[in-house]
Length: 363
Image (cartoon, rainbow, N blue to C red; front, side, top):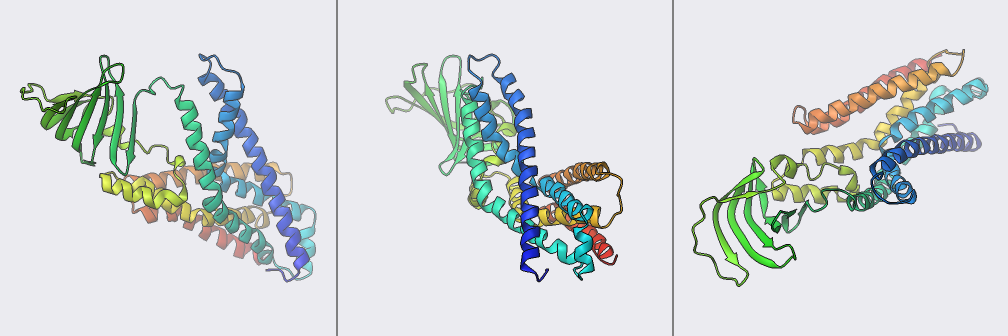
């Protein structure tokens, strides 16, 4: 680190300023793209423009959170390019300050920003996404069909042609729901009866119930034999297992609790474990992106114009994005250990960047 407090302060201020500007640019771009999608969704509803605008404002912060590593990459390129083209880098090198010392300040800030995003921003964006899904869900065609996992079990709400149903199961085991209770209501939501089953095979939309008994609204168990012990549902094993498809609604601080809950209910927790490790690795991901940006600028001699750096940033972002997602997918599908699938891309970027920085520091 540079010993001069004034130089450290100047570099920190310049880097934070650039990060803020690029974050605003990403936010505006995301808002513009998302607002058209929201307007298209609400085209058949009689609403004003305020609803799509508010929904976009609720959704975009989580999108910015996902793309923040690339904000750091672009910010780093802009920052190093600025001090390089204004000869500030040359002046500091002449005064005995190495390129490595200059990189340390934005590197520390990148780690701090990563920790801040995971511990403070992520819980806020998860609340905003929940609100977004709640508001938008009120306009969904299938809003009469809901499913959720709670500490009290797995709950499913369904609307049939002749009756409404509320289904509760204790947990999931392979393709079977265990300790199933089906509450049946008429169209006026008056309770009619409940059906209890030891288990339900949900490999298809036609559930096969095992060892069932029917209890009427008066609490008396029916003695009639049941010829076809089945129940037709909107949910099968695939839909039940995808209840947590949108992990953006889960805060970093709630991940441990949610993982334990899913384990208790018989769900696979690999996706959440991948998310947990990605959250823990996020500050180091930002650091690796910052180091990579220093390699592109301090370690190269493209002096013609800025478009070369823009091209490098875009190509690198695309490659890293797909490589990171591909590696995470291998972890989710049990093709790679979860820890390796999350940390391997970061380690590769980090090693490549460190080698490039050592080379640049020797110039």
